[in-house]
Image (cartoon, rainbow, N blue to C red; front, side, top):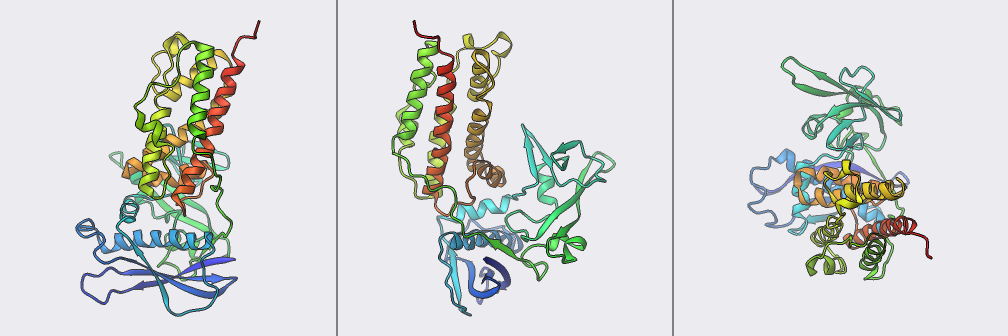
Length: 387
């Protein structure tokens, strides 16, 4: 089993240098390789101005944990003990992702319902609680409240922390607050109960992240034209059933874009824009909708209501899956929503951050194509019987 523990910050030897978070790999409890995260040369010159050393260190810690997880994933962890650190430099190409970490906090206890955000770690005594999702009590929150909450980000919290309790309150004047009251430790350490905010790198000395060596579920290889063929087939069946095209006549760029290979985060972002341009280009004629639904906007919302009108709600889950795909694109384009990427990737069954953006794009396509096939089958069921 692999795990990683925090070795502290390596202080720069030059004035103005960046402190470098340092981690050590453990294999079956035995110490092995040291990894140090730093910013290469003049990377970020002018773009990190105004960023406090504490915020930059926090982002580098999160970036470093992503990278060490990728080492395990790729089976690139050396097997011998060493006191010499392996230095991982943040390159110019990776700087946009590092900057996004300054704005983001991922939390697996966030639950979004439409445009509203809820905390699923609400304590029993939370006076702001409004309901339940399974065994979790829910309370209203916001991205700003979540950022101010002392519960460490999901991407850096100790693997042994569980059952955090967060209490909400409303002060005079309507100001909302959320306060971390405590948590449990799977190993029975008292720190989680008394100071759960310190269950992070640089906090409790017992902090640890366990890492899985299992390959991510994003290795499916598809034919280059598989996605465009699925779109064309759905459009053809739609026209046969309803007499009008589903896919809006688009410029060549979005359609051609989805067959271009991906090798970087920027490529992935561009391909997601191309894909969602096609999905959001679905045109559903008012005549296919009940009168009460004709004012509905959004291609997937209108598609859902059109299919309900002619068949059933069997395609609802499929359309919800496509909504998550669109949310990935939205979070990539808006830095303020970068914190949502982990949640959306998780819903799609894809590990985040990806160790390989090309494989992540193949994984996205492997989720979208079955959705298009399912929609096509629902439309075919609504076709009149021959003869």
